[in-house]
Length: 514
Ligand code: MSP
Image 1 (cartoon, rainbow, N blue to C red):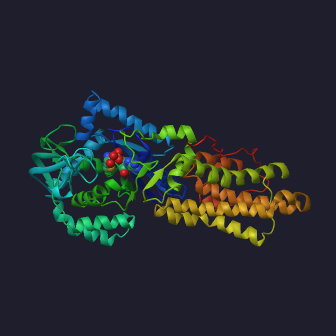
Image 2: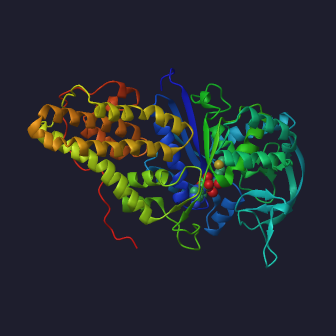
């Protein structure tokens, strides 16, 4: 809001509406949500965008299979993605649909600029196309199956396409892209993915077909309405459209270039090669960073409709609660690697790390405050070495997490918090404040205050991951609502603050696991 705050713009991919939302979509969106919430907590003016990718042959086919015209179909499925964002507690600032007028205006303008710059020419495409990936492939990239059919590296079937097409002069961008990667070493992450992109671009780039004539569901090419724009050109531009481009006076104009496009590994090439080339060719700045995360399998299997193992995010939340699911998604697997989703692993994280480690620590500490300190925050005496150590570890969390989260190392950020939580459990066991009640009530009060201060730091930095539960914990710690950002941690809570009666924040999950 304030013009003084630094800006931060983060995006999810926009989701194809041929499918209903599943846990893979929820994953990308929740990771961005954590980042957006963290940046807000850290004093940034954040713009967090998600949305739906509604044009192209794949969506047109899905609509006709559903017996609906494409717009009615996309209206319906787009809503499902908006519902998914709500069900996952996502704090997006805008939701873009590529069928909106603002997007048609911005994308038509992008095309015009590319054309005016001589970056687009009319030719003919003859080659392979995979509708499922909405991607063109070379013969050399395909695998021939025993039955003679060809499939793309993703496993998607391909078809032979012959049609007039506009081309983008991608081949001319090879050196400039390589220079760009070289001068922006953090543009693509993780490093293993960056290396893949570099070797792909070093291998040579061919001009890219950017229009289709064999179907109608897309944005018409200006001046040649027999063509609709290639869906990836259309889709990628959503990130620019949402800033109000090309209107320089749009309220969000200052958010471009985006700070981060979060994507799955399968769509990195579009974001890290085609997109910066389109933007530079149109005279626009490329985004600052693209992070490619890994894929989830389900109980060891690839997620697929035919296996019937597709998990709807809302079902998971209904069974285990929202915050445990959000926590699990970012805690279980190093961000950037592939991971396996299993109910057993989720329940174990819930019971061990949430209910036992953090939930019990807070419940034990706060019930002692309620019982032995008349329910008010006690003062802290002169710190012992142990007090100083645990307070220093908790106090270091904001700066430590800032570093990890800026590199999208969410699992490491959580591990740092849990080191402090585990140290807190060791501290309470050794100090035994329940026993101090009779021998040294002043020291007991001091120990409980150290615990409350430590828990406040922990709950503050965990808010982006588990907003609902951490709000409850901060309420119970008596932290005023306007003192919950990272900067507020510098100001101690007032002695004597009246605390509400403590209530457990993380229930244990007791269902049998099959
Ligand atoms: N519409 C394009 C993106 C255009 S962005 C300008 C698209 N959509 S998608 O719906 O197919 O996929 C969206 C995201 O979901 C991708 O980042 C993809 O990696 C992610 N996932 C889909 N299945 C997944 C898993 N099983 N696991 C993790 N993420 C997965 O691609």
